[in-house]
Length: 285
Image 1 (cartoon, rainbow, N blue to C red):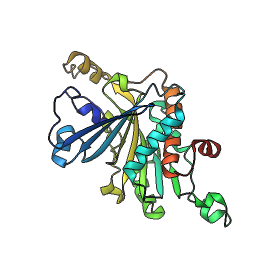
Image 2: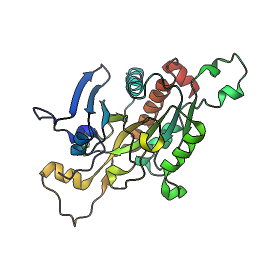
Image 3: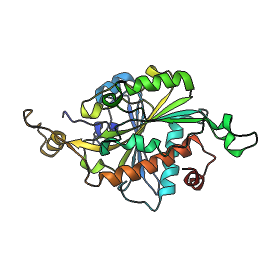
């Protein structure tokens, strides 16, 4: 099937008795979500599913557009998975929110950045002994999109990495999926970086360890699925290539983006500032 998806979990047959050589799957569950981790152990195995060698963590929850009662626990779970990917020893981070803030399904990254607690400047601006000086140095930016700035987002981030010199980059972006049920209910985390727009056939320059020189953790939520993929999933046959295609997004996408951005921002804040509680983050956001 010629499906369009950014999700590694959708490239694996859930009903298969065994996985292809070089691919492992681990399942775990908490009271707040279920987690599937796919580990691609070599490049040859990755090529078979169109993914790089690395770890892909899929977190499945209830509708992210709702206001969950277990918000704090979700934050703790997502933060723990981010830490497992970036490593506890990497203390400084550059957080980049990709996307176009003028297009709601693509506005996730910029809206997350508006709620990330930037702290890199505090060490120089606050007096000795101030408790905020003990926070890890975090920078946050939304670089916009090529059509707005004339500059590839990856070029902006690479330049910033040379100046800011973070230990890692955390990139947030809206994704595409092939299964409608995953829209707004799935979060993917990976240590392989990201190629923005690849799921909607608008691939931009990559954010990876190879291009930036430091580990890149990608965080994404599927907000769109294209109509041709829906038809192919339902019928098992590819649609007529001459038929027009369109991107489909949930009708509550505004709430989805708003509430998912808050969840991801809190989770990233917790991952990069582990000494802070959710209550602390609420007060500082």
